[in-house]
Length: 351
Image 1 (spheres, rainbow, N blue to C red):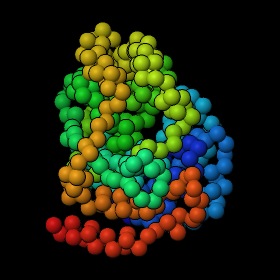
Image 2: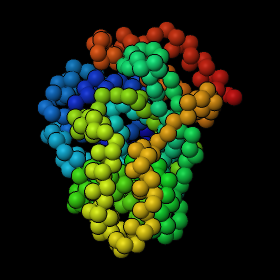
Image 3: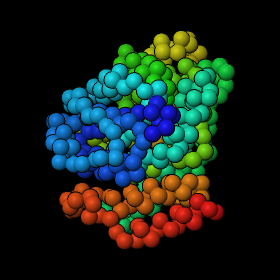
Image 4: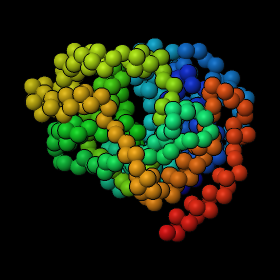
């Protein structure tokens, strides 16, 4: 393990998806993720430790802690804050158990932060695995796609300018690599706020971090996410509401949101509202800040940009657990074509 790898911890946040959590660890173990891993469990009961006892992960280093049931956004924030306090490495990256991480890009972000003390975070591109023909959770018919948006850094000298730049066309920075002190303060801010919504929570996190310093987006891909997955009970409730109801609920929370934002950033509430209101309203109307390009070009561009992303995709494709039908051992889900496709990766590396 290199010096920079020793400075990184992946904070894996899990809840009630043991098949996905075990798969995440299987993938991490197979590619020998060189960072410390801290698993923060907020499941409805403490059963995952029994799953860990039945599994063997000799090629990764991890700690596990059960924090009690995440029955609200506030308990979710407190779980993450408690976990962050238990981590001592210089850099921390949040992860979900439907993500497949690309260590080389995470290391590049850490190297950048090492050399640039006025930056508080650094990240890279993200990609997604999507089911085709509504065949969810099966071992075939998946495609890899990437966002059509270029990565955007926030490098203005003034904190308010960085906020305005971020919210005028919001891109989540949730899964970037943070300095420990930066993300620790952000979650302290969240726990002290009135925000009780997982959608607005990303805004508070972004604002708290960006007023602390600059953020750099590097080339490469830091993670590949499997989309269209089972959600937590809280998110399922939100998803089941109609979009107009969700929009109205969020708008009702904006007054407290601006008040909290003012306290966190030390910027007047009225000024924040003037500067950010148009961008935030745009985000609420869109319903989602991420749009995916559905072209062959998008997938080819992704592979050419990062052969490691293709490797992660191939591993993910043959590690996907069929939750509804297939409870067999993950090791049995590998298929012979995977080994042949490794030759394609070798070709792309030399392209």
